Image (cartoon, rainbow, N blue to C red; front, side, top):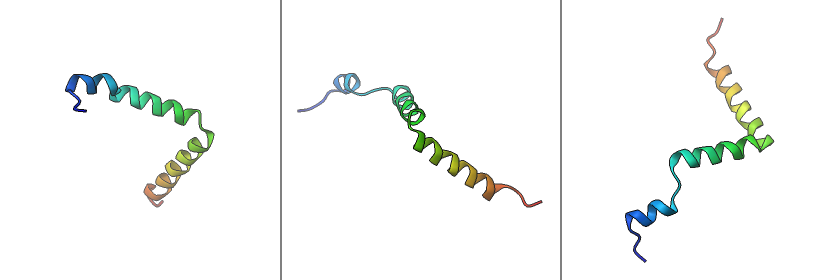
Length: 51
């Protein structure tokens, strides 16, 4: 089956919709939130200038 541009648009979600869906999934997943927090903390420790 060859999909035309119009049919692809009807089947696919917009980028904004995909981002919103992903955001909701992450906010509802406590383990994922903790993993993100750890990554942010690690970045902060690595990039923090030495005093």
